[in-house]
Picture 1 (cartoon, rainbow, N blue to C red):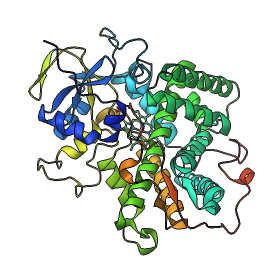
Picture 2 (picture 1 turned 120 degrees about the horizontal axis):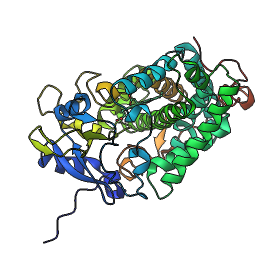
Picture 3 (picture 1 turned 45 degrees about the horizontal axis):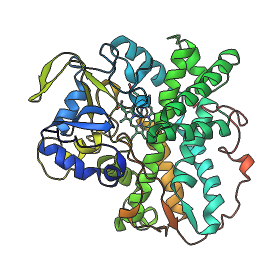
Length: 421
Ligand code: HEM
């Protein structure tokens, strides 16, 4: 008898309608076996309480896959996400606390006023480039560009290099056949940046990371930057794009910024519940044979949390009604437990500012493709639009800033400190 194939968390069908797969998985219980790439099996938590327990229970679950045999094929696209690296995402206990402190202390140097201005400047420049045409792809022309400009400034990367890294990172997370090469390329470019700042420190996050009293070596610094730049850039772009799509398609947001009906912040909150930019967690590994929420797990088994499925599984607290009215912070879009996102404040500030800048200037945007036909990027980890084509009444900004004078267009360092209060 041939075994039934496991539900797949990859491919066009899953990307088009993940909720259908989550609903079927919930029938199998709070934890269910899935395939996350051809030949790669995992156990997926789809129930809210179970998900929270996986994320918080450091006694049962480890983030470090090394004690167990590596079962992910060498050429599998998910290696770029799951293969061990000496980075915050793969560390437990004291090692994790050390990396996390360096990242947290460095992010704390980012002044909210400067950040808001960087985003507003970048937004004005980008909008000025397409406003007169009456059409844009809000993913390529806007959502991906905003965090790219901000992150290039933060880390002190020349803009063109940041753009190349961003493309590389997208290839990596699309989990295509080039994912592994893309990951190597990303790491190589950051290695060059770190070597340069070790020799010539500047006022940017890369230099601050190197100067932190925890004294990370160069290789450790490269890995923390790769995680922060990579996931932060991609997830912030996805949050902006998913929220803009939500606002454009939902009549409750009509002219909302002027009428004050529903704000960008409220729209973001709804997206964090329904369409979290990171749909599935990185790896958690069972430390010993155990039974967890009634399900038998083997030592070394790969467990993933579906943030997306957990958010829609039930209202936190038990009731099985829809969760949209639930409190702002109870969703799992930022993760939970010791590995939850350390950057939710700057990420929210970037997203809110970017969305308000756009919707306050172009208030009659319409999608040119119906929502159900919008293409999503494949893979289990991200919930990301491939494109968001819109039209609007062409608009000529009164005094467009020349690109070379805008914050985003200038190479890092030309306008002084990239971070600071
Ligand atoms: C400024 C932008 C961002 C930066 C620098 C950033 C950075 C990071 C870092 C360094 C981690 C690893 C934490 C650890 O393992 O202890 C992390 C985790 C995480 N971040 Fe962010 N992030 C950003 C934006 C976002 C956004 C917009 C979202 C989605 C709403 C998000 C969701 C998450 C989630 C779900 C995790 C847990 C990842 C996992 O499952 O392993 N982040 N983030």
